Length: 135
Image (cartoon, rainbow, N blue to C red; front, side, top):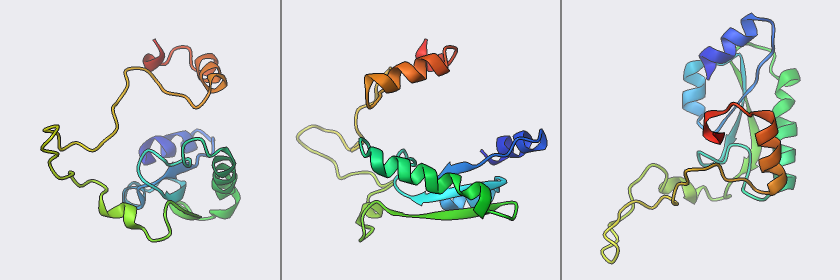
């Protein structure tokens, strides 16, 4: 993400990366980034929490004005859980479920994109008709 952002910036187009992996973002040093301490895959907010998503995006986009030094990372003031207990199971294999013989706790993956609403699907389809995952 940092390499691409720097190349785009070199063309004169400002960029801002949104991240939920602080250490990785710090390592790749994009020109500017907003960090949210949420689980991977939830960088733009909780599913179906439109008010939170809009507020997070507005706060993240303020990074264009707030981040004045290249490589700066703005931490957004949102928490997934106040006690941070969700971090205990991130990137950890679950205990073997003997009944199902499965140790993978992740949700099933889909072959097609999943959207919160039909309107989201229509916007994505209209905005990116050549995206390979929409073919």
